[in-house]
Image (cartoon, rainbow, N blue to C red; front, side, top):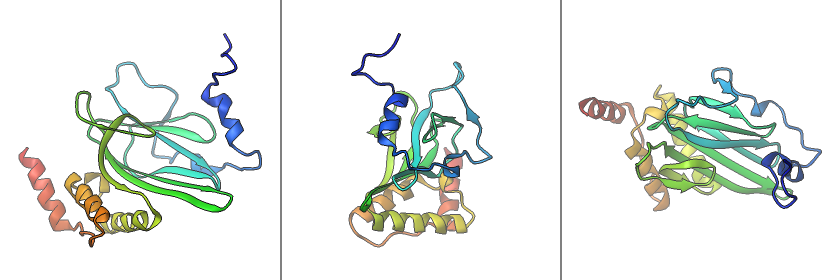
Length: 196
């Protein structure tokens, strides 16, 4: 049965917002190490689903780090990444119009299990724990530099202490110097996790 004219399916509404002269190419292709699936298996645990999108010169909504269990391609522009409970990931949002950049946002999130407290975040279903939020270009670039430093130390950012991401977010909000995350701090975090 066809949908009434006032109700459009997402695939029907999308071409109206994507200019015909926009070319979409490889940035939306999945990295080779991630499985792209067409549907979730019925017996899977509840997953946190994160919307991703890329339209050249308009929007780039991507993962800076994180290890999704699966990725679902919705169409040429959109994907959905699914994360297991407890997984930590970082999503970056960049938007622009004909006059330049209109929005930068970086969030570090932790997927939750059913029954846990979580925050509702646009494009993240059903929600997640917000560890860090940076909302302008300067702050986003500062966090990206911190992530680069962590990776240069051969530390996977998904394994970094959630308390560090919260502290980093609080320091950004207070316009204070950003704390470093070194190997000693990471080793202390891992030892604490071993005791749990």
